[in-house]
Length: 131
Length: 312
Image (cartoon, rainbow over all chains, first blue to last red):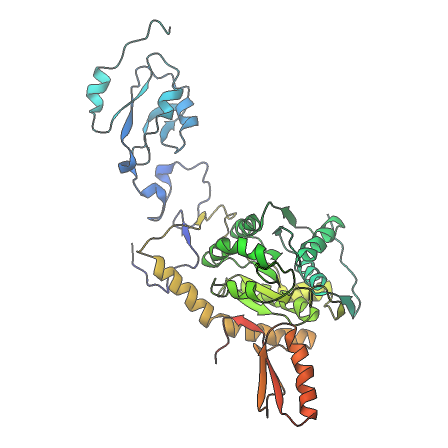
């Protein structure tokens, strides 16, 4: 990004989300939008997180509850299928795990340093009492 | 829905509050968010009546405090509307936090400040302590000495504040009760002439422009804070005074009423002078004239623009 002098930037405590004009924001996926370097989309806040969600797609029924409830829009859904988590913006709040209705859950919280493949390999079995 | 124009006489008998309310009506404001406090209450009360009577198209938001009033004005201004409110004294004190938000965000809000002493002791009448309290808040400040000037300076304040080079909020001061509740002859412009002078509001980086989304009121730390404040201060000190001169000249052509950033009366040969603000100016002029009959060369200087402090 080109550096600007104190008397060159736009006035007001104001930042633009996109470079130039955006026509169809609702119909354009995040990865296809031309975000500025000032946008929160281009900034990672993953180091705010102490525990992280791990997604096990074997049990997911694509109910979209996690997508609806995520307060940071960090559940990535395409064509109504959950395809992953935006780990640059997830704060590890665990709401997605809380609202997941499957048995066993399709999302579980693990320490930040846990290995995803290991955790999925040792995923909890169905809770027969709850069933 | 068509909104009614008001037929005004060449000379109306208005107090300062009603004169300000009439000016706000003529400017076709989008949002007024306000909370009542003596002696400024009749401005927003009058504005609300114009709204109820079908003379105004905008939104009047009744809020729970002055802090909320200015917060509402800031939101509406960032959204891209023409915005105004009114307050006095303790109300301004409660607003003070958000006044800095407004100027830092470069939002051209017009605030009618009907000057009243800050407690304690409690006093609903005037001194100028509220005006002085916010003199370094980054707002432009005009001072009206009479109801006529309260009317004129409201129209002028919108023109100056909303200019895209300026984009700073403006306060129009008038003395509590001495101006705000004292009816005098006021010569208003017609609705068309007044709105023609102020012009249609031109938004800048408005939040309702969905094709160019913006975030207002962002955080900067040590990396950008001084750059922003330097830019704001530089614009206040270099761009506002020339703009005021330009708008004063245009207003004189339209109305025949000439304003100066510093008003001087009988100063050409004065040996002594009284320097003052508000209604004191008229009183001092009367006394200065009387002094001259006794051989004392007295003059009066009244400050029309308090911020930025006039410098030449």
